[in-house]
Image (tube, rainbow over all chains, first blue to last red; front, side, top):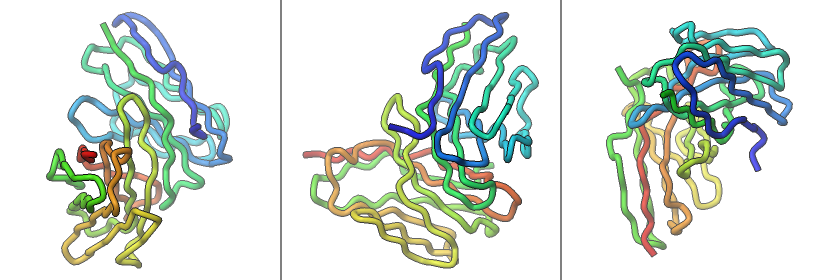
Length: 113
Length: 113
């Protein structure tokens, strides 16, 4: 059982919908991340939060909006997505934000139709 | 431009033999490296790490070797088991002030019984 849980595991949404992905970590970590994995591409870092403060926005389009209300929870709000945004979205956490192993959740499969 | 490369998309090994997975990086500032295993429809699972102050780290059947001068690391699995069949990712980080890891595109390992 992973210490990082993501919901929903699968999501199909239309291009005009608004939806959110949720992540919760039970590891007592201080940093949380969103990664994207598209078909046949390496994992791409999207956002990093450390102690609820965003420390990195890796040139992600504004149709992806992260929210970190506390150190255990992370959301990714989705709005007006494109079909090419269909991918596996992975949440992760680490103890701190420097040179720490990151632990992943099981991912949310997103399909935009 | 990909800073971490896994040039072998797939590897097939007989059960009981050694599996060697390779990873190359281009950024000399990288000083912390991770290996992950990923099964289909699951998030990556952390396997083993190594920092640049070491050239080898061992954990059970898994050993990671780091050659800083060649900017190369490898993961050895001995003996290989059918349950090791998965996609393996290497990741590298360093030179920055937060956990920004760059991932390779993965190597799919098939261990034949």
